[in-house]
Length: 437
Ligand SMILES: Cc1ncc(COP(=O)(O)O)c(C=O)c1O
Image (cartoon, rainbow, N blue to C red):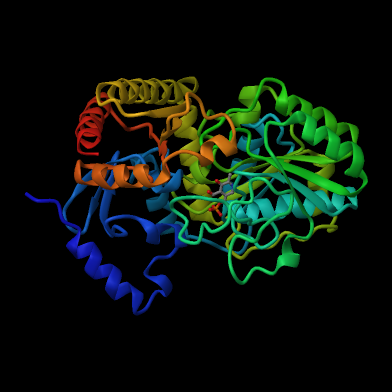
């Protein structure tokens, strides 16, 4: 049967009459040949409205670490459907979840719950400013911290429709979208990541104005680039020296690299971490975890933390079910995911050779970034900017026809329910796709 996305295309056209832009999140509009409309998802597979089934490595941009409709989540949510989804009142599940998080995340002395990664970052910044009495925030080129006005800057991404300007060389923050006032980023200082000397020079000079340094522990959003040896430790040292809050944005890495987050894995003690995505297994829940000294500003009323649906019963139950699943057998599912990702990454590297295509994969545990480039390594944002992004988008489009769903930017996630057979089928699909490319 010939591959078609006709029904998705029709629904996209219909959707545009009612839903602004036809999709619920801007990123999704750029998918080629069409933004896919889904009929159902089960396990490692998703089926679209045209009847095409895909092995899913998009995994809803990260949250589906247990795959689609996992039985543990089905059970938790079916229980919630009988007991009520949200109360606007407290319930035991919130205590259970917050307690669990304080047990598994080394830096967590207290936890605050919210709905999305964006909100968690907003709260972490607010806490940092209130705690330090300072206002500026240092963030890094190539990192993403959600779409709120005070942190969303322009970055080149093939799946951002308005990716616009690359500000890689500049230390001023360029708004990520029209409608964002330039003054909203007035407190942001941009730095290149993985450059300890640049960070030290800035903090030595400006520390009296800087409330927080926020970093992804691994530059997952743009190239899956690892921190250089000692870099995050140096960041910790400098921020501690100058009374600056160190925020690790673990919205991707928390629960994807392991149940103790990247900070647990790397043995780091940031002041605050933001968590989301995989935490809820696909339900909307996020949070900030960190030191009591800072988190107590919520307790004593210094900092307001609001949200109608914060800690709602259904999302809390989903997070508990997800974290319990991930923690089973001492987290053995991470080992399995890492092995499969390694098998995939090694297999694709071999296929690059077979098809004489210049490409590379930056791989960290259960996540990797695949790119087409003639560089022998991509270890910073500038090098990442030199990849052939258009070629990868084309590859992602061909992969759909070959039965595999991957994000057009190149970032691949895996779930606990992907199987050996899925990996083999995926490598065969990559083989065919590279031949066609
Ligand atoms: C590191 C990081 N922080 C924050 C966010 C924002 O999370 P959300 O999309 O849930 O608002 C994202 C989203 O991709 C992210 O990757």
